[in-house]
Amino acid sequence: MNDWTSGYAADVGYTYGSYSELNPLREKLAMLTAGYDIAPCRTACELGFGQGVSVNIHATSQPDTAYWATDFNSSQAGFAQLMAGASGAKAGLYDQSFEELCRRDDLPGSDPIGLHGIWSWISDENRTVIVDFIRRKLNVGGVLYISYNTLPGWAPMAPMRHLLTEHAAIMGAPDRAS
Ligand SMILES: C[S@@+](CC[C@H](N)C(=O)[O-])C[C@H]1O[C@@H](n2cnc3c(N)ncnc32)[C@H](O)[C@@H]1O
Image (cartoon, rainbow, N blue to C red; front, side):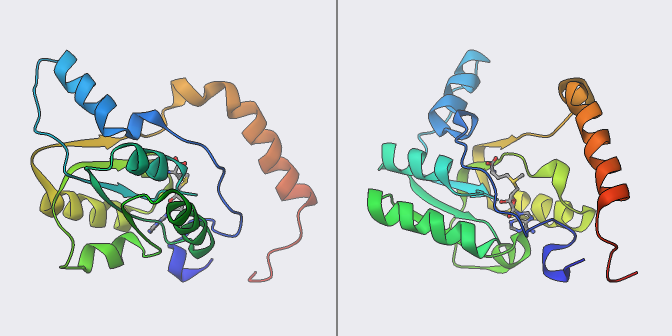
């Protein structure tokens, strides 16, 4: 296991999806539907942006919002920065771990903070780091968007997961560490 990833598998690059759930305008709509008006979004933060497709789309289409976001996978962060350079997105995209980002004192508070596909995959220590980060960085009246996996949603994939686990156990190369 690599220490710098806290157990997260980082040797395979992530997919290139975009997720409209992270769009601050969609979050505002959800809040309005629930009966809450919220302040205009001036700063937005995304933790663990993957290849950075969502953050780039949202930053480019909402130029009045300053984005800052991180993903500790340098290759993915490099791709995200390349996209931002091409689109002119106003976004600070870093390759820092949640812990490193959390320690910075030069970053502003954020109106929405978004995490998509993060919570279910990280260690308890990293969850604690993120909770502390949200306590300090989410502006009063800001929205936190956090997704997580549940068994009812993922049950159809369980047989495939079982098959792949069995394949790795039987056919995979022995772990060099053991
Ligand atoms: C399952 S992917 C989700 C990516 C993206 N949010 C999406 O939904 O497409 C999780 C991402 O979190 C990043 N990550 C995991 N642990 C991290 C940590 N401690 N600090 C920073 N990024 C981390 C990974 O590199 C990966 O890109």
